[in-house]
Length: 328
Image 1: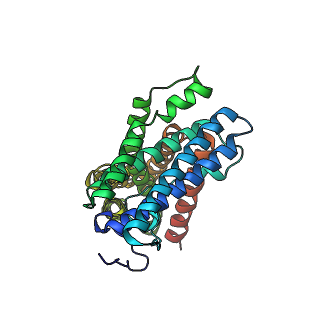
Image 2: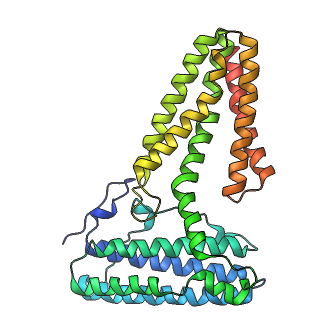
């Protein structure tokens, strides 16, 4: 089957890949994951030497998988392996490059490594539906079973380092799924709706001094932003490989939270008195920014003061821009 070439800057859908491309992508993933696990080991070796050994073993296992895949590719398609990376295919999560940080935190490494293993297993399960060649199906099936049959990373690390602080793997998985499918799209929408609508709302408020006109501008900006963000989230990732769930549901969550974020400080302008409405709207903005900072601190492993500072500074800049434009 001939290789398809993808338009520049356009990600291919996983369902469009042929068997050679699936193998090439698998080789790229195994190589990338092996190098990431090696970097984990290097970053942990000084403080957590036993845990570093676990990641060295995992890196070698990924390298062994890569060798199996390369041998099969040479047998089936020849020595030239097309360069297809995760960034070329929609549906993959962009993992935060924590492996560059020194010193590495064990908990954060553990969470990310489990996400990578989970994503890899889903990739191979999906790849089985894209292949018909018996030898390719056999190898991919073996890799699926290898991923399923692995002793969980959580158990490995509990044995070598976390035996007194063990956590239930199933609860961790459920938490990650909740994060990917609900918290992340909801937070993205709330931040966009709460901050991006500040400028048009307060520009209209100070330019017109009319509460009803300001309410109409804020409502239009909130609903428009909600529709835009909802479509953007729904089209960004089909969830087939990442476990992020239905794109339609994520789109609705993002769009709804975006609209809610904007309407929160728009509704006070239903009050006829301009000064009263503006004071209440500003207070609502402060509450919204506090809620965003709290969510980031609770679910996104961000220090609360840092999250509050980042959100408040961004909100004040946009608010200031709106006030300046409205008074121009």
